[in-house]
Length: 138
Image (cartoon, rainbow, N blue to C red):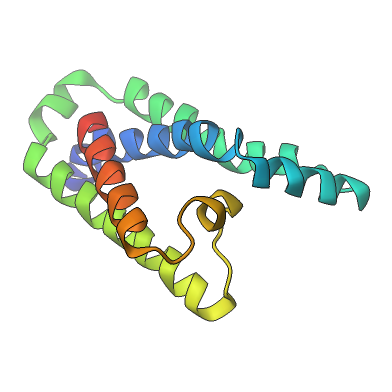
């Protein structure tokens, strides 16, 4: 239980990160708007489906933190543990993106194709920014 309670701040922060990044990077991207139109022509509410997938993470993370006792959090929080988990999560998530691209030839989000493609320098800057943002959130 101590590990679960200790990582709750980190997990909540990562949940917030998913929701915030979705609205900051994906929703305003032209590729996402195009995908929404393409799916709408097929009768699929793609935008709404994506919102349902990305929005709850913020609220679940916040609810998890608010429902825990503050004394338990104080006793079990581990800043080094949270930071290590955040770095692992960032790295793992990026590896999954690249693995997916290797298997399918497509990035999970169209903005990645338009903004970065396979440019190592652009991806490096993006990854560094993501790690910094996650670290600041945690």
